[in-house]
Structures are given as structure tokens and as C-alpha cells.
Image (cartoon, rainbow, N blue to C red; front, side, top):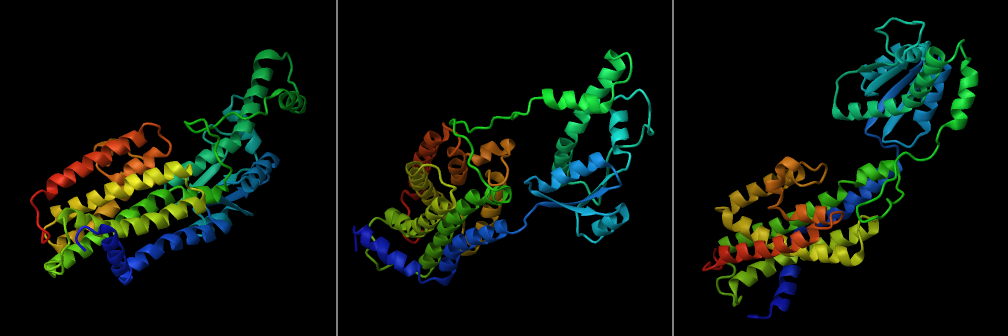
Length: 382
């Protein structure tokens, strides 16, 4: 077997696939994707909000717009504020938005009406929440967007009547002029940095699948760390003592590659099936660099840990830390120094950032060099 690393790879892969824990780890990848597809086909939102209209026609239009517009926020209508607040206390909704009967008067007062119809402290919409968090703050941005049209017209109406007209111009007349002369085109023109327009995608599916790419990459890395743990266990059992394994550094990396190649292939296929992949060539090159860098990363982690127990303890800590440090859910720029040490960071950044594929190549060469230095003079019993 000495020097025949292709045959060694196949034998080690066959042995690895007999381990139930590794097979379960591989099966988690399609299960996660399939589960997200099922969830995205159902009603799925990050926040549910109760809408109450106390008799305003204008508010009714806004409520219809909120309900019918595709959004990650779910909206339910309630007859009155008491019923909606009861639903809030029972955790059936996350917030309550109450539009009062004099909603239009309050909007007019807010934008500078000559005649005050309400008290200065009265808001146009009453918001009731149990707590204030990031998701509810984002939902209020949706409300601000829905109110923009009424606020814009009210500013226009009040400016005409207070500054320009000798006598009050009826709102109906100004509405006709306002609607006929405003620009109905798109305010934003979104594109990627490589000049591509975004793909059409269902809103609920979009936010569910956004972190999937990073999660699957971390599962691939987890396969490599699991293989490092198996290798450490085999070393402790002295399984390789009498085996003609050839170059011990290469043997260890062939051992780790068995898990990483299996995991990487499953993830790569998943990328193409779900539409998360970029161009096929780009994705294959990035996955090759990722597997190579992960192999050396896992080998370094194995050498830095003292024994099997410390290695096993470090694995979940590393994966959880990378969920935060790497841009799986959010990109935290303040952690850039740590991010540059981790293989998933380069893969996640390389898809939409032109300079990162070259940085990924440099990182892969650097981590191979560091791994070789760690392995100099080491024995198979490491």
C-alpha cells in the first residue's frame, strides 16, 4: 500500500462510510435543504403582526397593501385593539399596530396642518409590543414605507394650501394632480457587483436560504474535524503502527480528505440543486480550494490539541464560533482579523467579491505551508 495513495483513499473512504456518525453527518446536508424547502412552501415569516383599523378609510388601504404585499412579515387583521392585545399576550402575534379612526387627521397634523385636529402627543399609528428587538425594528421600517404615500401627499396638500393658494384647494382636486404627475417608476435599481441582476426568488424562500450556503460549508468542515477525531482515535489505538503507510504527513491528509471530499461533493451538488451556486467552474474551483484548506486546517487543529478529549471538545466550540465570526448570517467587520484565519470566510466572500478568489488561493498556499511546518519531524503516532 506504500505510495498507492489512490487505493488507500478508497479503502479509508470505505472504512469511514461504515461509521454511523459520519453517515448521519452526510445525511444532515440534504435533510436540512429538504426541510427548508418544505418550510418555504408553507406560511413562513419572521414576525407576525396584528393590524387594527378603527374606522379610517385611508388606513384600510394601507392594511390591504401590507397584507397583499410579499414580505417576510406576516399580518393578521383584528376587529379591535383589545382583541389584538389579547393575542399579543397569548404569543399569537409579536406586535399590534392600531390605526385610529382619525388617522388622516393625525397625518395632516404631523405634516404641518394649519388647523390642529388632534393633540400634539397623538401619533398616527399606535404600536404595542412586549419587547423591542431587531426584528420588530425591521418590521417598523415596513410600516414607515406603507405610510410614506400618505405622508408625501399630506406634505404636498399642506404646502399648497398654506403657502401657495389664496383659498383652500379641495383634497380631491389635489389628489388627481398628485397621482397624475408623480413618478411611478422604480426608485432602486439593484444589481450585483459583477453587473448581474438579482434572480427572482420567493421572499420567504430568500430569507430562509440566505444562510444555507454558510451552514453547508460549516458542515463540510465538520466532516473534516470529525475525520481528524477518528484519526486521533486510531493513533491512540496504534492501528497504523505496523501498516506500511508511506509518508506519514501525506497519509494523514489522505485520511482527512476522505471525509472532506465526501462532504464537499454532497454540498456542491446541493448548491447546484438549490440554485445557490455561481457558475459551475467558479464553484468547483472554490470547493477545491476549500477542501484543500480545510484539510490543512483540521490537521493543524489536531496537532494543537493535547488528546482525543480536548479535540472532541474543541470541535463544537469551533463550529459555533464560526457561525458568528464567518458571514453565515451577518458580516461583522470588527472580527476581520479572526475571519482571515478561517477557510469558510474566503469561500463565502469569494462568490460576490472579485478579489477574494485570489486571496483564497494565497490563503490556501499559506495554510499548507503552516501545516507542513507543523508536521516536520512528526511521527504517525503524533
